[in-house]
Image (cartoon, rainbow, N blue to C red; front, side):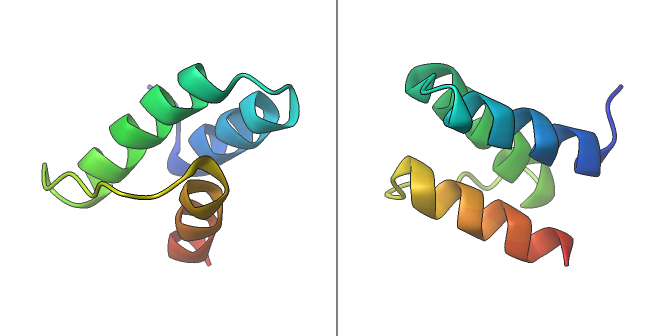
Length: 57
């Protein structure tokens, strides 16, 4: 299983490659896990990445 930091790098690389749908699914998985199964919705992909990175710092 990937570490949280590895997941963030994976997400960042997906976004950098323009793979928005896959990045959205990855973000959904990461945030769902961090929130204990509570899924946070309503973010666009840039907000997802910013939110994910802020959790890790």
